[in-house]
Image (cartoon, rainbow, N blue to C red):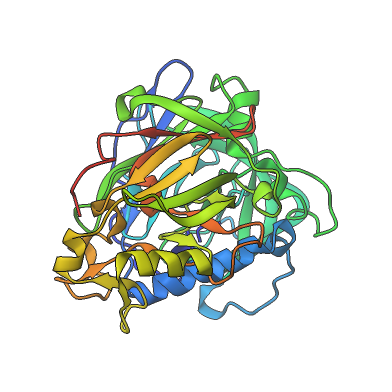
Length: 434
């Protein structure tokens, strides 16, 4: 979904995905990702994150809830009109595919049809349908086949409704055939992007095509890459680097394996949680402690890893424990926690304890990138924290979300075959970029 919350909000398109060679090695494809800038202000990002969290806590049925609200100027009309197939935002030659971090969400470029039309799509691990048409309309070509089915997904503060097609999808110079593509006839909350590439669990597609009572699964892009022999393993890994400016081309989305050049040490895996509703997503069990004293912030519970969420969200009781441990106060303008420079000097690390491994979020990693404060509505010299309240007490079955503020410090791996999620340290895990 993306939505990563902020993607569900009306955003301002910054830079298009920078042209970057797609690399193909050992049956893997790595796409560059671009960071997309957001002009709504931090409070809007927080509100969007919480809206998304509330939807995710409702489980898969919340995603397939019928959405009939008029979208006004945001409506996208399906047509066969000619549109630009500009390859400048990500089409490349043999190899990997890149993703660009653009402010508050990440975007990759893919081609659809033959000849392909290039679309900039939000990367979402919290949903599994791939669709276009929010900005640039779906262009039918000789490879487009209408299924006669309606497709519909809700993302909290955004949604789309449209028609399902199967079509050719181009990743770099490699091609997937028969991929399900939603052509949006209505799209709300996706200004400046063309749609979503959903890389969540396949089960999330049940009920999205052919009505909410349908039990049909729709293979994801990752599924089809694997089943068609294009990649060697049915998994996708996500790499983000902490931003140092508003529009960084600082990410990669790798299908089929892990780009070893991006990690330090090995990937450690943990099985997916069995606790619902977190178990319907890329859900894991974790506990959180703070500082050298190992102060308990959150007892072991279930939550999710989500590229569609900007911040690190945790249950209300855990958030209150974190606020007390850090001495942070709420900033009235942004809604985020803030610290004085003196308090920041005393800020200790958070530790995310997952599958027997401890993942440290340093003091620097706990603060919003100060280079982006002005862009998103904050004071340029203020210190804001990326940890915030999910809005419910623990015990809901989805008590935390490790959003991309966490994922910018650890490469993440989403393994469908083995039902597990993995993490690995990168050169940015302990960086002081913020």
